[in-house]
Image 1: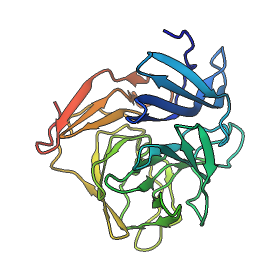
Image 2: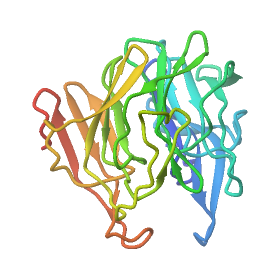
Image 3: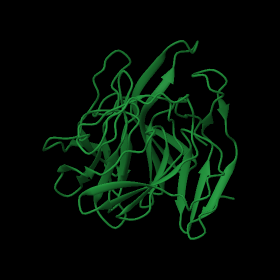
Length: 292
């Protein structure tokens, strides 16, 4: 086995390519040796299952150093669409560009065209199954502000368009687990509802931009986003069993007809203190909608 491995990190983005039978990831956030300062990185790596080894592709990718960005594989499985993210620790500027990363040739193309969504990090971003379109939702800006707008990126024309958002979850959610189950449905699990201010470019009447003052709290909410003809409506999946542990930063994997939820963080009510790492793995069969 190749002894070279990527440095530990969080807030990177990653994809698995079935065509290449390899796992790719880009960027993220790590710490200095004494854990006193966060450091953003822009390297790209690939893990080859056939050889059980890692290869460094770029020390800094052409799209630059970034963390908390979104990326998803296109319909033909050869290009990764990359967007949004935080460029460094010392600015309130966020990326709002869009890139196409060809995995076979390891080449990057800036495909930004029309006016994109406002920059942010900790975004939700994924491809809508059966299409070459991608959905972007929520995310965080400073100081902190939780975004609640929803956008679609056309992977063929490279054009962004905004959805008409019909409502906003109250409180809003960020650092959630999510998966897209069809060209219409997006499922969101858990997240941080910690009293951040909420605002969005699309937050116009009848929507309300509100200051939430709830006690810091991770959630076990399970929400569904209905994407239908240019509108986006959040629905509380009340018929889902909400007994799964409270979590943020969890991983959710779709292996139809099952969803699997693993890991994440909970806390005891104090930011950055007493954080609890979840170690349970939960499974749900979609027709049943009960966690096990």
